[in-house]
Length: 372
Image (tube, rainbow, N blue to C red; front, side, top):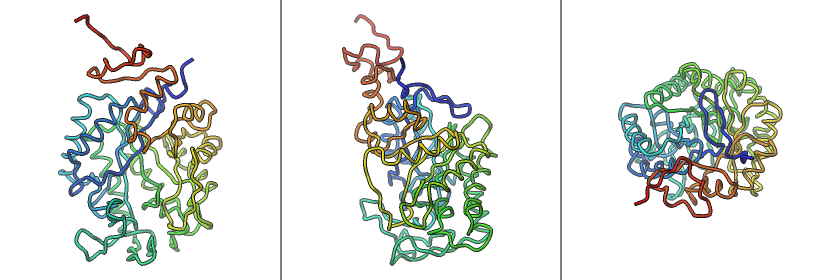
């Protein structure tokens, strides 16, 4: 029997060859939003990994939507040209489908890269800017609070999500993920910890979901039928009084009614008060409940590092796919090694066919070897 991990998965009209997804991972290596040579190296190796889908890092809809000054963006001809150059190079040698994660960082914008401390850059400092959010509530004590978005600002951001999606279509992107997790803008609207609005976008669950769903609907409308659109969510804030799993289930139902192809279930990132009990697969129970109660194709993530562990998650019906981040950076051939362990096959570049170990003579698909 074929391992569940290596069975195809359909997301609308896109069929993935297996259920291993490379999660979005910020690289903080762009220049004025433009993808760099680092992205050729980074995405190239991940696209040759044998994974079923590669999701680009959080990609900002505007300069002020970036997490840091070195975030990847897709808001101008220059950023589109730079990312197109990278994708052309990657696709020349790797057939892996590529999705984009569209993002606005909200109050977590204007931050230093993690290796520079990750703290907020003062709006008046070089490379800093004033952030914007649902409410004028700072992410951390001592930070400059964001501007609270007005109706004009909400429209500008909705239009920004759409404009970035249109540019991604110009680049033949295969899938579209809206970033509604990890404390960024759409998550900030969802959580009562960061959303204190008293208008139609705050208060009740229905109101707090309104803006993220409006952005989703706007992107879904411009992306052609058959190309999947979905959202990444944090299923809990891990803080008393914050966003909850029950609310995540309601959001998943709402996304499903609006044509979402999947839901990518993570947790946390909104509050510095979060208390997360880290353990292997610690976020999988959240994905499991969302899948069980909504039937929406569900992607699980969070300290999934072993092939047998990933296979069990899928074989037990707890999720439909697994998403790996740090494990893929540590071992960019993780899908090769998982296929070898589980008796499955992956696609590998022909230049690497001769690396196939003798004990796994059918690991790579469609290999051909001459006699010379």
